[in-house]
Image 1 (spheres, helix red, strand yellow):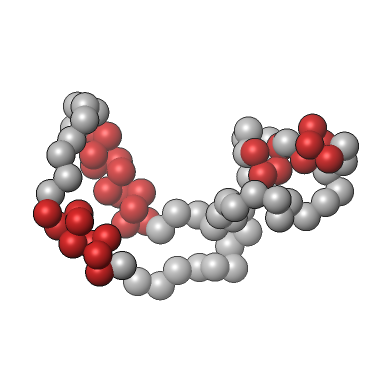
Image 2: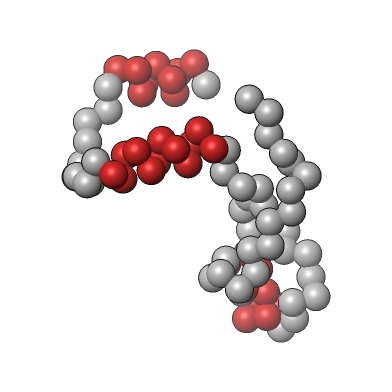
Length: 76
């Protein structure tokens, strides 16, 4: 999968803590917001698709974690 890391995403004005709280925290928005770990890239399309598919199931209760979940963590 190829990913476009050059695409600029303007997150200001959408309640982004990274950008929209600069004035509140520092008194100015003329700073580089390195004070918070946040992504400035669009989420990869396979992740968006998986979340949409899960949301469309319409049942959002608590779920069990299969063995593959723990295996993925161990491999990571």
